[in-house]
Amino acid sequence: MTYFFVFQAKPDYNFAYGVEDPLTGNYQNQKEVRDGDVVKGEYSFVDAEGVTRKVTYTADSVNGFQATVHNSEPNSERAGQQARYASTLQQQHPQQQHYPQQQQYSNQPQRYPQTQQHYNEDDDY
Image 1: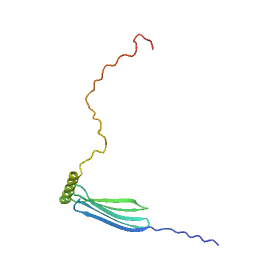
Image 2: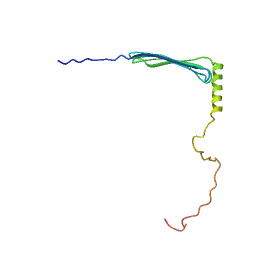
Image 3: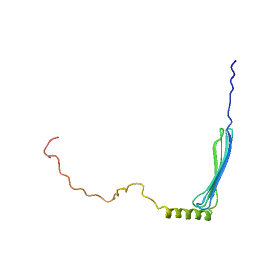
Image 4: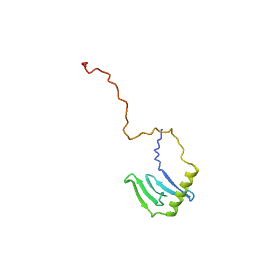
């Protein structure tokens, strides 16, 4: 006698993380929940201008991926932190030349020596 079992996995998970680093001005977080074929979540971050952007999303087999973006007013303190950190990094680690120096081209017309004629005008071709 042979038995067959059909197993259908129902994926479920729940996760969240967050970063708050005042030195670099890096503020971000994400959380997401999955129950079978339905995913719901949100993430947010503070951009270089200090604007907090929050994205709320859902995804399922009926509606597909749907997202809504919310923007807050700029937070000048956080933007200032990011700018100060970027300036500090620039001072500590100046840009290094990673590639050989590229040849500089001029947009001015170039004058080339006159070429000699390589044929006789009387010849028939």
